[in-house]
Image (cartoon, rainbow, N blue to C red):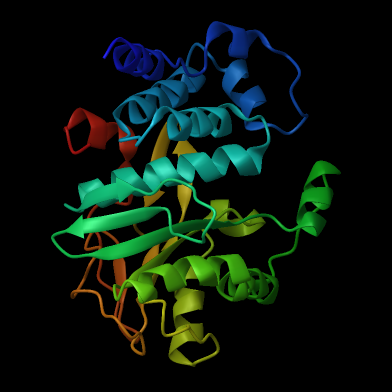
Length: 284
């Protein structure tokens, strides 16, 4: 009993974004951490505070899972940090939609990130479409990056053919449940209000993109940080239901986002969904 209590105390005492982390100046040139530390008394503080609250509320299964998330959130490499933030965001968003959600621990076998238990059952895997290496190089050299929907489409479809993601989604199929892929878009033009989600919808309608039967839906998401606040865009995100999926989701499973059925789009009253609002309203 003493050892168990000690283990619980150790788990609860994991501090994220500590003073020693803030004091470590060994930071890559284009790291997210530089932006946060530069505005630590204003927007940076808001960003860190939101992540701390999400980290504190997140239902970790054990200390190992909590330490791994801690390490990923504090990582100065953008893609590692963003991956962890996306998982916290997905969990918070699913709670906002009224679902009971269980994060699944990493294992040796392919498995998704979350199991949704009620009011309907399905599995969720989270992934990211990042800037291409060519765009990253141009951006670092202060060169222009032309808008190219075809390059974006190639990056997007590569995610759908990624063997690791396919195997993770197949876990849902093996459990005879729907599988949903949450895709966060961090390509170069995604932050400039470019209408990639409508472009994608046209590709689905025209059958340019085909989805495996194991995949019940794609949730395409634009996530931004606005004055330190983590926000999901309702106007530029969308839900794509796979009509050929073996296991179906209920009608309009994610009602706060645009639902795409052929070329029909539902309008949203408010553009941004802020995570700190969800925390303050006790939705999380």
